[in-house]
Structures are given as C-alpha cells and as structure tokens.
Length: 567
Image (cartoon, rainbow, N blue to C red; front, side, top):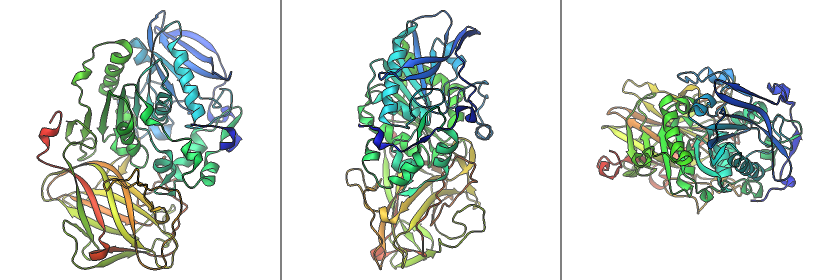
C-alpha cells in the first residue's frame, strides 16, 4: 500500500477546543487503585508525536494491554443525541470513551487500557488522514510501544466499535509482533461500496456527520474527505490504496456483527470475518443495538474470556465456543439463537422468487405473462427531507410455514427510465406481521424503526466485478459509467445486504423498490441519506417472460440442523 501527500486533499483542521477538547494537560494520578496518565507522548518512526491516555493497575507489572485507536477524541464520551436512544443497560460509567472499552472494568481485571488520538487529530502532531496506510503504520508503532513498556507483559489486544473496529483491520494487517488478538465490533470492510458510494450513489448524511462533526479537529491539516469523494467517484488508485488487506490478518479475532447496522456496518463485519486469514476466529451475529450489545455485562465477560486466553494465557474454555453464533431476528431483541460452523450458516438454499407486477407478489414460479410497475421518482415529496414517499413499487411474499433466512440477498431487476441516461434504485426488505403491521427493528446504534435490509443501485454502475460477484452476492466493479440504452430495460443485479430473519406462518416479506431513500430520518441523525440523485424520468420495472425479475432469498433448509455445530 502506497501513501503519498499527493493522494490527499487537505484543509485546515478545526480548532480542538471547538470540538470540546479540554486542553493539553499532562498529568498522572491514582484513582481507586487505577494509575491514570493523561497526554503521554509516543514517538512514531518518523519522529511525529501522538498522544495517548493510559489506565493501568497501580503498582503492577506484567500487564496485558488493550488499545483503542480512533479519531473521535480520547477525551470524548458519548454525544447526548446518540446516547439517548442507545439503551445501554446498565449505563456506562461517566468518562467512558466513545465506542471504546470501559477502563475501570478492564483495569479491575488486570489489564491496561490505552486510548490514542491518531496523527493530526486533537493535540497529536502531524496531519490527519483517515483509514490510510499512514494511520495503519502509526497504529503498528503504537502496538509495539505498548508491548514494550516496563509494565507490559508484551501482549497487546485491540477492541472497539465502528471506526475503532476498522483500525483493527488496518493495524492487524501490518502484523505488529506484539499484537496478540483483536475484537472488531461493527466495522466496514470496503469504504467505497459500503460507506461512501452505496450502489454507486454518493452517501451524504452519515458521511456528512463523520467528516463534519465527529472528525477534523487538530492543530495542523486534516484530510478533506468529502472533497476527495467528489474527486474520486469511481474506484481508482485513491481507493485501491485504502483497500483493507484483510487476508494479511493472522492474529486470533472475535467479530461481533449487528444486523441492525444495515447501511453502516453489517456487510463489512461479515465480509471481514469471511476474508481474514486468521486460523482462530469467531463470529457473533445479533440483532441488537451495537453499543447496547458491546457494553452488555454478559458480552463484556465474553470479550474478557477471549482476551484472557490470548493475552494472559488463561484457559477460558474457548474450545467450547461455536465458530459462529447467529440470532434469527423475530421481533426486537427476540428470535432463536443458533450455533453454526460458518457464515452464511450451513444449509442455506438461495431460493429464487419471481416478481409479478400484475399481482404485486413474489412467486415461486415465473409469471406466465409480462407486466410492468412504475413510479415517478422526480415528484417532489411534501416532507422536509427527500425520500420516496408514495412513489414506489411493492411486492409481497407470505410464508405458509416457519421460515428462517440468513445470508446475502440478490435482486435481479429488469428496469428502464425512458428518455433518461441513468436511474437510481433503492430497495428495502421488511417484515409484516399477520395483522398487516410492519415490524420495526433496531437501526444503527440508537434508533428503533429500521427495516430488515437495504440495497442500492445506480444503473450506470451495473457492470459487475467478475472476481468478486456470485449469483448470491452481486458486486459492482465501479470502474466506469455505462449510460442506459436509448430504449428497453436493462438488468440490474442489486446486492441487498445480508439478513437474518425468523418468519412465522402467515407473516410476510415485503420488497419495496423506489427512486430515493425509502426510509429517511432527519438530518441530525447518523443514518444513511442520499441527496445527489440521477433520476430525471419515471422508472418502469419489468417482470415475467423474457424480463424475469428475481429475488434470491437465503432460506435455511429445515433439514440442515445436523450440519450445525450446536443445533
């Protein structure tokens, strides 16, 4: 991976104090048996100093270390708007760093915790870049520093949520000798496809918060991420230099993935688990809010069992852990939890269901007659923020028996936009109960009204990557734009992010297709939003005969129980 200044567009960083930074205040003190050191300088291999906070047992030596590495500020706790709906129970102690391990707990169990402000953020020297080779190299140096302190036992682990998970991917791929294990919880694995250009459509709401409110504070320059997105709308050398080198990761890894992080982390966590080269790896798939799950006492104990084994040499019975544990979402925080040997789970049958525009149904057999459904995505909604409104097409599948789904979903959609050169298509999957009510699910870390799944597609980006795509999971190349033909539909192979779901007899899977965000939350929320769309004419969806549009669902074979590790 190369990284030169020419690859970045920089702007002046925002003053640290404007982001709540309390000032540079080096200090050391003891509190309830915990030695706390603030604003400790650590020199990188090029002489740049970055600053860390350290919490460790007072007077102890031979201590394993947990490193939390992210740009949100080692002084920062949870922003109030985010904490309000997170339902963390019990609430994290005051002073808990955002998305990072709770120091008093870990220090009480014999660990040191190091919180680091990356290069160029807050008071650390240099210029800030994000998920870059430079950030990974600095993380490597931090691990090696932590593993060679007089009080350290030489074994370092990394833990944290979201960005603090993604830095684990980048750092672990550099293979620091003192890194012993990682615990990435909810992180993207493909910044272009999963975060910045979903289906080729520029994401503006979440990325706006990331680049505008949560990052960009420092004393020097900061990478102007949004300008770089506009400068690099296609996959090119800029993105290639930032590709996660997951196959290079060898250390033991315990992944945690929320199905409630659709549009943010779900796909990335599952792809990272699948791709990492670690011989010893585990995956926990759940449907809860990410912070609530990360800080739940029983799950923190599970994290400690993992780190005790690899950082302390304790026999914590990891041999009894299933490789994969999956919660099949029924309602919020309910649904069967099953052990498995793989992701997707053993016994998945990717089963085709055919769209029928004449009946608005999904059917096992292809419709015998052609039909079309259409909507006008250019109509201005009355709501204060852009979403599909009533301009959409809906297709339903009602299950006649208990059915479990787990894995990626693929939609082969024949569509056209007469007179237009391009079109943007948005897809959701929802569960509808036997009374006809939509079932809401946790969304991101603190909302309560999400769908089962999302998918997106800009028609000009329909070209598939032959090396990455499968019939069950189409992946676009994003290397060039292909305008729509002057007449007739084209096939759009749309990746719908992986799901887990548990359907009772009489419950319905609802597929919705539109030309804008189908669900949209006010701008202050950290959720996906897409404001720059390429729709100029109505959308026409084709079904039946020569234009057979098909949804492929990952249905668990009811007879596959004997293939699972735990039943």
